[in-house]
Image 1 (cartoon, rainbow, N blue to C red):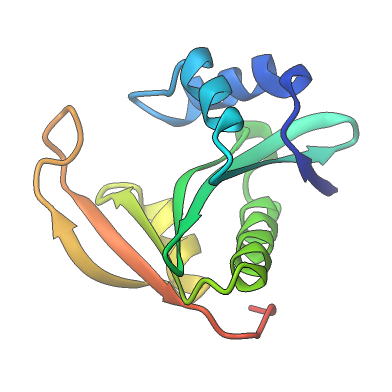
Image 2: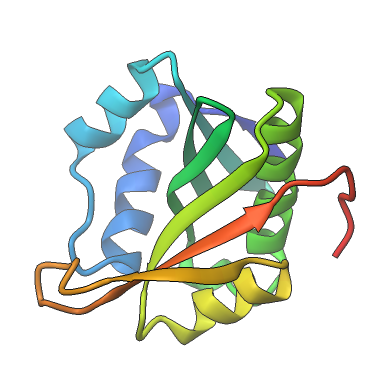
Length: 149
């Protein structure tokens, strides 16, 4: 397993993962545009020459926000999500980011369990945040220098 910077050659595989992971997936254009934003860090997890996951974060004003993080269904439950969270934490510490934030569907128990096991705490609820009127939980991790779980 290795985590590398985004390249356009990964885009079609990322679109497939996006569609299998989210009820309102980002379009190919949205993903491509994100990669062009200099405030965004877009990384791809590769396993045996296959795109197994990816994340997109934005860092500004001493904070990191996870915009998107997904693992292909056939690679789930193999610690790839944890590996990407460790990489996100390293990236944010390198940029002197004190907090990491994200929103997650209240019903997404797998993601919630992952984030909470990593130390994220629920700090707010965004009512009817998603298109189907589902609430989003706002989670925050206070960055320290520890990289282990």
